[in-house]
Image (cartoon, rainbow, N blue to C red; front, side, top):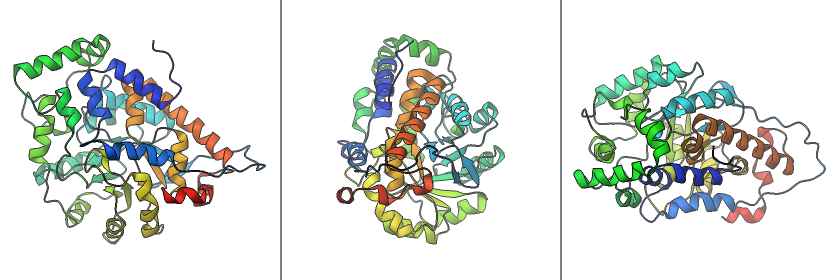
Length: 387
């Protein structure tokens, strides 16, 4: 067994050592020159907090209400495509870990495990992330499946009308090449990781975009993943699509991928039940604002009318507290839980959630906060406002 990780950074190193190269690069990489990917982490780490002393912090409560349910802490597992390729039936392992910790999992449209398989793995509620494809009849069916599985919130991703340019995926051989030579290249990377090959490559089958099986050609492999998305995701989606989705979905509807205050205001006016401040983990338009830098202006524009969730760059419980102080109500982690799952499966996800909780408690105690409601811009030092 690998040496126990003490941080998300440790899990990243363990994931890199265990995964075939093309899978690690898909998880770890961003678009173009990855400027925004780096900013997500660096800008958040540069948020300066006020340390307060001689306050009774003997009792700290992390519980948080979101969409009609009380969660153990204001943290959820963000949707990550193909996460079932990182551990055997990975989405089901993540769902069980999230349920045990009483935090929400958001299942990706392009997951390996289907909505139904995840629902059968746990009785706990989970959320579903929706991409819009050209086939509206299939989308109607997919939303109905999420309803039947009792998903409690629908996160509609709005920042992917077309995939970003991801150089790492081309260099690693995941995309941009086909034929025997490309397959042999990926096979060589797989063989070099026998642990992953046995646990996931052989015992974790079938390897497919489970939710999309009806519309993806039989036998399509991972190398077809990017090509299929580019051809089938709908670049014509617009604000009017919200009315159509709302007609099909009765529960909380959250727009994921808001980075501009004007779009945040439009989301409120359009009847969204929440937004996720996000730049898709630095995987779409490079050079845009980090989530941490975009968040305060969006929080001001929304003015507490709907909940604000955020993702991008979260690597610790301290980062969660920083995001809450900048104006978020809830924080979604993507790479953080995926590194842990790639390294140790569901046990890794459970451990990283315990780390996040512990780190949040320390950060709250040292900033004088005993509840989530007490975390506000008051704990942000003045100079941090200029990040």
